[in-house]
Image (tube, rainbow, N blue to C red; front, side):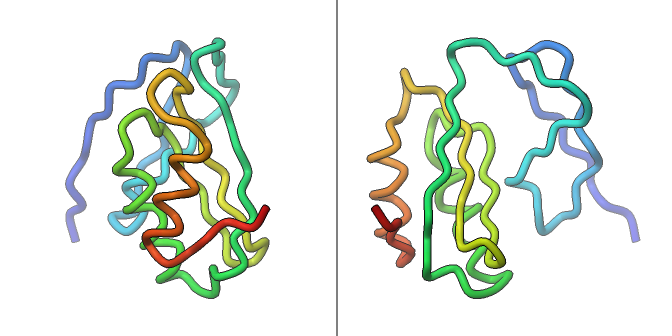
Amino acid sequence: MTVPVFLVHIPHKGIQWEDKDPHDLLTYTPKGEVDMNDTVSRVTLTVPGINCGHCETTIREEVGAIAGVSQVSPSHQTKSVVVEFDPAAVSPDQISAVLAEAGYPAQN
């Protein structure tokens, strides 16, 4: 089976991207060291409603569609979502609102 190759322009230097499983195209996992500057922030949200891989896929799709979000890593094992984003484009509150609209409200 041939898997299509997608090229993604990322504004950070020194990032090499792994080949992606077609089901995980919205999760970007950098290999090696990442040189991030002040334009990228990371937030970890506790989301008790993540129960399975389908939940993770839905969260990747919904949160990954937000302008300014560069990485979405949900985990049903830890009941959390780690999001890397540009704080000039989106806030953690906006990310939480999208999660809630998708049926996965974040816990305070």
